[in-house]
Structures are given as structure tokens and as C-alpha cells.
Length: 113
Length: 111
Image 1 (cartoon, each protein chain N blue to C red):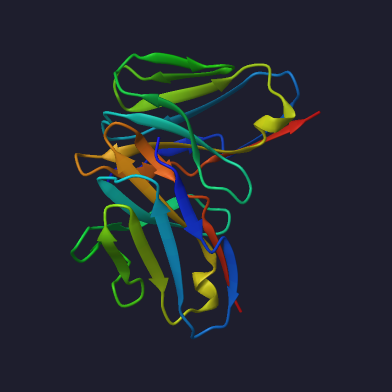
Image 2 (image 1 turned 30 degrees about the vertical axis):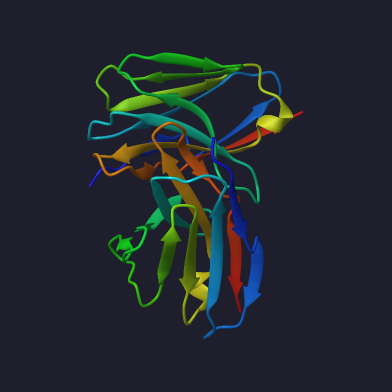
């Protein structure tokens, strides 16, 4: 199955700044997704990263706050913009390929101070 | 929208005991997935179920896809300390491959 490298694995950021998280897959995948996992909570889908076009966002998430890029079939980035302490969460990249199913990265643990 | 109700929320058991957790939904799912998440890691797939009534095992883990397609359970037999973690059920919504997750079951195993 696909292997996902996600970085950084963790970061502590000042409020008002932005952080870009990178997700690299070792093979071409059909779908890539970004999830947020708030402390003690389950995973919530932020958006579907579409190759070569704008991401598709779930209700409650907007492009200005969480811009996403997917320039090719193996790479995507998520930016958390103008951060506040409420953005402190684990952010997870996921890939889906019909032959492999779903794979998750190890996550980026973000703390905003 | 489709929601998954997972229970119990947490479990504290002794090493060697069996564990059971389940997920239910008001909507039909065509696939049920069970994941385990260790601290500081992303979820790792344990078992995938694709057919109503399907019973699948992976070592000491057994999961079943309910016949109504609205529920699934995961059993762990003879638990060991490394079974500690959070277990999630999940299923794709419709045909767009987006996963909905249950709220998770936190398992603690006392040696």
C-alpha cells in the first residue's frame, strides 16, 4: 500500500502566523484528503485536495483559512493561516487508491501559543 | 448527514480479557473500516469489510459487517498491553470516497 510522509511532525507556532504542512506519497494516488483531529476528538474531514484545481472544502472550512495545493498525483500541502490557539490540533493527510484503500500519514501536531 | 455512533467511549480491561466495541449508523454504509491510532501517530487500518454479513479476522481481531449494513463490531481476544490505543470505525460516504469516523474507543489494558 501507499506510504505517506508528512512533515513537519510537530510544531509550536505563534498566533497570527501561518504553517504549511507537506504530504508526500510514494506512488500516484487517485484521491488525497486533509483531516483535523482536535484534542481528544475524532477525525474531521477538512477538504479533498484536487489535482490541478481548487480543493473541495467541507462545511465549516474555508479556503482563506486552509489553502490547499495539489500540483500532482503524489504531493499536497495544507496551510493553516492566521493561526489562533483554537487551531491547535493534529492535522492528517490521507490518500485513497482503489487498489490499496485508504492510507494515513503520521500527522502534524500543531500547538499555537 | 451520515454519522457513526461508536461505543463504548472508553474501556479499562485486564491483560488477557476479550474486548468488544461497535458502531451503528442511521444510514447504510457499503464499507466498514476499523482503525487503530497510537499516540503521536496516524490511524492504521486493522480490518476492512465490504459485504453485509461478512466476518473477517486479522490475528486476534475479528470484525463483522452487520446484515442491515448499518452496524459493525470489532472484537479483540486475549488482549495484550500493546493493544492500548484509540480504535475508530469509519466508512466512506456515498461514492465520493470521503470517510466518516466514529468518535473512537479508548482502550487501556492493565498488565
